[in-house]
Image (tube, helix red, strand yellow):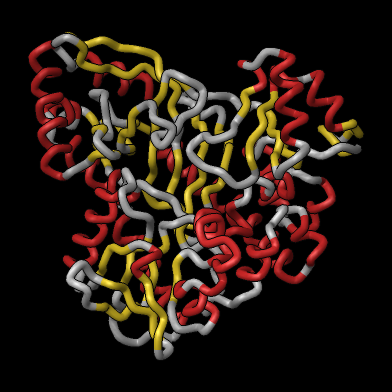
Length: 456
């Protein structure tokens, strides 16, 4: 059914419809400021289309694997030996020891996946448990696409359901606030560095929160001050706004690197340690965010932490992953020497830094010369890295308007559900012509995701 729906959509794109659709897309993105820096979010004429069965699979698989990750996080808080498998830094250990005031280690997160058109393969590649972007972008892009000529024509034959997630994020923030002990409406600070390409999304959130009666300001870590047991944010006019809830978009690793030995004396850390702010996500999100969480999930020694349903989902959807280190481990139940195995099987493996984003530091074995792979392995032994088995990458044809004409080209496409606790609502999808699908890395396109079914 799904391939038929995609073919039908492409068949609607005669030259005039395609040109009118692209004009509507570019106008809509300009009006809503849907840009990543100075780049428009989407460069193609079609959104990602998935079936109701595929969305149900995403919800089920993410829910089970997310619950397994949380079982590990709960156990790791109590077990230093298990926690050592995440390769936390000493400063991260200090921050994780502080209780955030609510239980959920990752209030909102994103599971990055590949889902094939036929729904036969769903493979997770990363769990963004700390500071996932694109919720507001995707909601707004959905509205822009729904107002295009081709989507209106497509809707005559197919039901089209968008997957809005902004309300779920606001509800999750407020739920954490109330569990923290907050009673009145909180004043929210959206905190990240200045000059980032995602600043336009912060503005979208600020407007959305205001429309729902919640005040939010956008500020940097340097704008924060902790005094008289209260966190304040400095405004452009030098006034100060008291902060109740921090919507933390800045990454913990960047905070710790930026402030170094003085990091724990930063106002944000002081207010958090004193229990004077509710921060979402908390520092305990690191327990899920480290890429080594997949190494713990796929290690047979940890099976006892999971229910049979969770273990089945891990085996089906989570690729074999290990921390890069010398010595013995297991692969498909058999003992191996990890480094020797990695050298002999580079065509089905890749290396990832344990705590990076934007595709930084990833070495793709099947695209790397043997000598460069050996050098990358040697370098990975010197810093926290994981090695991961290749998953089945999803490909789809996407139409674009080039020199006034429709051209359909093959793209790699991922499918990254937003999660609130263990519940999926909404989805990011990115397209690329190269293996690393990441907007931060400077390539590709972002599209909204719609659930479609034929009208009967």
